[in-house]
Amino acid sequence: MKDSRPTEDAAAIRRRRLCGTCGARFTTFERVQLRELIVVKSSGKKVPFDREKLARSVAIATRKRELDPEEVERTVATVVRELEAAGEAEIPSAAIGEKVMGALARIDDVAFVRYASVYKNFTEARDFEAFLATMQERRDR
Picture 1 (cartoon, rainbow, N blue to C red):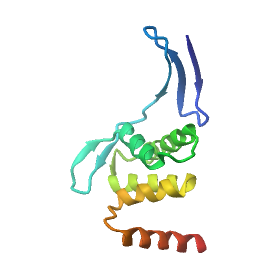
Picture 2: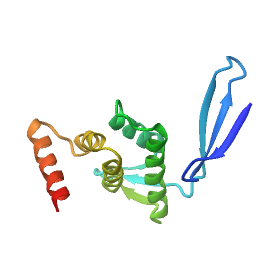
Picture 3: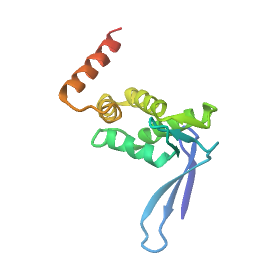
């Protein structure tokens, strides 16, 4: 048995499937990839863009937060669509990190700070304090 429908943002097809062997139900998402994206690391190394790696990093940042899994998936899909729509085949990893931080800031402050702490390589408590102070200043404007 298979149930298919577009996701809320119409960026993918969500399919509910049934395993023929064990009978378990599971969901798959099918997306059209507009172009092959290349990530340019800060070292200059170029690697293929990996949507699953992006999704894992967002999942880690949102872990144990009371967020709708579909909202998290929409956030990842939005970031990927923005990257694909930018028209550039090569994207600096810093640009991806900034887009993810912006997207997480819109859905959950804690996930945003968690992601930023890894992305910006926080090494001590003062790094968190400085980041939170900057975040508060932006909100006060």
